Length: 87
Image (cartoon, rainbow, N blue to C red; front, side, top):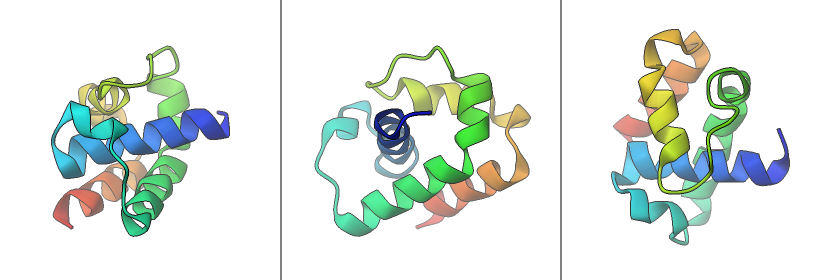
């Protein structure tokens, strides 16, 4: 997964789980929020490649893909997503 795709995935995940709006994926994020998003994307890297490989970036589609596949996600990925939702 390229750095650009990883960044897009992180922003999408964060937008869906933390900011609760698809339009927020394009919003400038505070540095600490960006770091959290990248951390989640790193933890979920394998899950993203497995379940969301062909998903187009933007509009919360990657986050929706992860949500649709929530039962299949690895334990670390599920935990990382849960942690970001609680903050």
